Length: 156
Image (tube, rainbow, N blue to C red; front, side, top):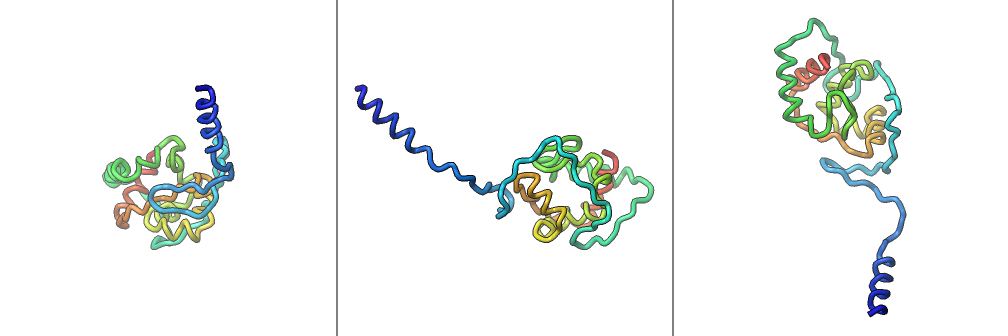
């Protein structure tokens, strides 16, 4: 009986596999960028000049539109909360204070064109690394939906 237990123990120990790092596969779309440990206390880099890659070349906010923001809040609840929290880091970055870190046009373009942005935009590429290769899923938002979300983000 002892021999059987010893044999089973040796088999279990030998099945541990190798310890080389593996690429992390995430839902939505796969990325080939290696996983990186993120410092939770790290201050996010700020770039207010970059507009990203997509249909929005510029966005200047005027008077706050509560109706548009309410639509954005509803959309956020439907399409974004699986990965984003308004006031805390989650699977993706917190959206509170987003316009202190990013140009509004960049925010619109990442919502409208995440696939190309993650491949070509330096900020989006860095965020992909910082958030363990979790790729922002393309929600196929319309320009009006993205604008409503952008207005809602102003109120966070």
